[in-house]
Image (cartoon, rainbow, N blue to C red):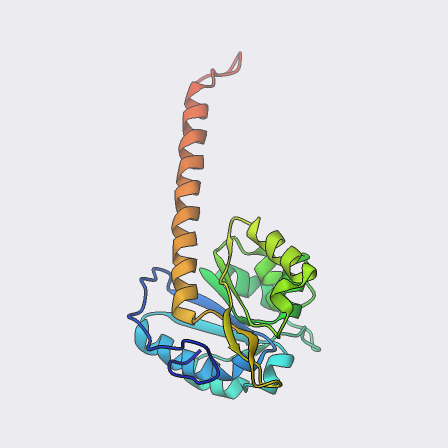
Length: 230
């Protein structure tokens, strides 16, 4: 959501970039009109975090609103299409993405992508990478009018919120391009989503440290088995 965009309600100027400790970010763009703003956010990321490496993946429906070439030129790495390759490949794209990414943002996240992610589907490289990656994942839904009160959408969000590594950025009111009235929902501005992702990363790190400490204490307290030698 670029600042001052008249399509969005209360769209103000950008604030200072939030702290971000990850250096490798996977950005997944899906089929929403908000995908048209990805080139803007790509430029913002370059200036806000000069040392950040970003790899972009876009769905076929996202290509209705943004080209992979536009993102490739701005990120300095090939923007991938979220489809399985037709030709044999030496390396699996989903494994490369899942092991490379230190954090994942789905921006924007369409209703369909939110549903597939929540249901555990893994029918594309980006989805399979997200299902398998043990890193913080930020999801920024972009929705049509009425979607936020849909029982299906609410169930999907509730399912995602049970996952310790997933954080959902609440969508913000926006003008519907069809009705011209407020009622649609735009994705949370990317800086705010990144702040949520960083907060979740800190929580995951602390939880891992506590788990590791407990394991060490248990190992020290466990007496050696009979017949064993130290």
